[in-house]
Amino acid sequence: MQKPILALTYDQIDQWIASLQPDLAGEGFACAVGILRGGGPLALMVSHAVGVPAAFLRYERATRAVAWDSSIPIPPPGSKVLVCEDIAGAGNTLDDCIAFLHAHGLEVKTLVAGFDDLSRLHPDYGLDARGYFVLFPWERHAYTDAYRDAWRRTRAGTHGLIGEDHEFAVYAIDLDGILLPDVPPSHYEADLEAALAERDALVPFERLPGIDLERAKAIVTGRPEMDRSRTADWLVRHGFDRPQLVMRDPSRHGDRPHEVASYKAQAALSLACTHFVESDPVQAIHIAQMVPLLRVIWWNAADGAGQLVSSHRWSIGAAESAHLGAAQAG
Image (tube, rainbow, N blue to C red; front, side, top):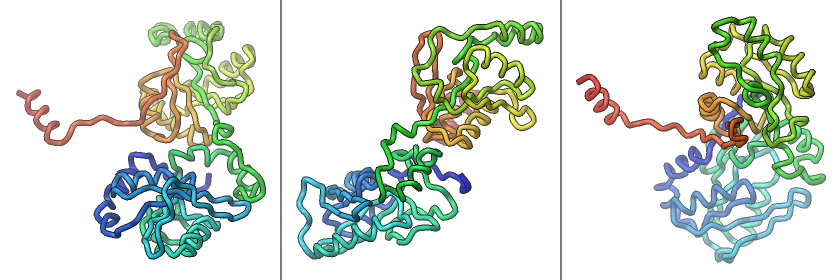
């Protein structure tokens, strides 16, 4: 991905729409019209923020056909509606949908979560994402290699179906604690060579995460690059040599949990992954916060179960923080 990724979460988009509430409410819209699928969440957010009904349009790229797809009728001529779409692209979607509504005598304004350098239309309400690749939570797969290939092959869905979202899932996995047991840190501290030999002799877990490891794009390990040869030997010996092996460069990333997590997060982004399976819960939390649209799964080998990790960060307010600091000082 040549452009830097601008990852927008549901919360960020919802807060942006909430900030527009006074302006949107003053427009007197008859309804918010979402273009399915990307505009659907936005129309619902506008509906909740402003109190107007939500309606939907269905657009077929191959035929450029627009259809009203809602339980409420099209508003009467002269009504004002807000068309919602996730991105104003270089194609015909917004133009055709606006023309459809104009043909029904409606006044149209537009709300777009992101517009970039290729956008043909400048929306009435939108986030300026020029210079970035905007990634939405409902299209987290859109920057994977397979999706971009399908997009080009089908000419953005105008010459065949692009595919289902789940078909573009790309996994990267941690190594220690996922494929084999962790060697306790105290062993490395006591005798490094003996600990490395102990690690080399380990066998894989009988129970592994429930994904097709043959299709995993990469093994992203916190082991330093100097361990590549013996790590690769272990993977080949136990049949895990298909995924790419990515190892930490100690000159760029230290070995503290948040530093290792930062390296893994950057690796997941550069590999265009949608999912990351991590064995350490602290690192899993850090990775989820650093790449909020990445599906981070903490794998607990002892229980043989995974848990999706949230990217939400909890913090106390400034006043509460000051009060707490004064209480601790006292």
